[in-house]
Length: 472
Image 1 (cartoon, rainbow, N blue to C red):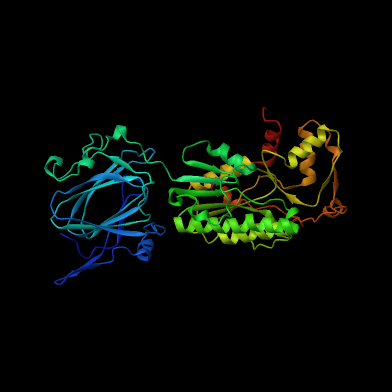
Image 2: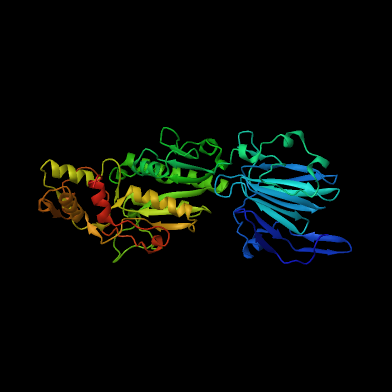
């Protein structure tokens, strides 16, 4: 019997993400009416499904009591409700993880609905004749998608079917599905790392490892500016894109050729990824830069400070930030003075020290060194921790310093006299340059208060010592 007059509410279950909704149904002698799916009201009621994004609505009709449909797990989310009649439903978590095999059962009538997350097996048994239920799904069926099944009679799940399975209508295919011990779990959605061969890309590879659900793509594997990027992958299989690809040659960006390349990599490609992420419910991680600021602020830059880039590189990074900010699920990771695996400032200073060269290093730019391993770890913690979308400053921690002071520290840590390093102004350093030079922000210090709530920050001095003496 359908219950009338209930308040819209949600009930959680032992299966993460599987929630039961009580729906208000208004009835009289003529019949009844309900709002089956009303995103605004459901969000206001605390039902966390605003990004469900259904693309298809299906209806299943069953004329006989006891019609039973098998335990199928699909690579999309599903919102199920009864239009007429009544069903007994059983759900089994078939995703990789600690809750694999967890079971939940309940009855559904027109006043109850259930949201079934990707990878949770669902099955139904009709309890009244002429039962029809509808389900919204947020992807289209594909023969290339991954599906997982469980036998209805599995002894481990031990579903207490109201009508014994030997007395009901079941398809032959459903009868032959595997027991739980033989089920291949539904893998998590894929993570795509672009720019995988760069300094940050290599750090992300070290952070995530070679899991089957992690995909690493260099420029030769995936052209982010290609017109067919939208069909280059089955994007609905991806949960996260970490874009570590970028044009970072700040001085070259001031040349005609470099300007074109910088806008292509830092804006056009990012816009293409943003569109893909928005259309497919993907979390987009975008790496930003201190160069979006002019460096004139007295004090550290916060995430909400207005951008004011000085050069072409900074302009393209600021434009990319603006594009990513409209993606429903996004992280803009703003960093500075990046040091990783490959040619960089620290390795250059160490090499000069070893070769007996006494460098002049600018002393009027202030910031913090940031190591790519720490950026990669912070990105993973933001994603895994479910941090709210937005901008996060990720740099080394501790007392800010100039490039000059950082160079002296490199000399000291490598056993050389730091007094061999002398300071100079930015203007004097570039005074003899014959090629275009990008303006640098004098203050690159980023405020870390927001980020500290989600991930520990790394002391720059400690990280620098470990970088230069990895065996210590």
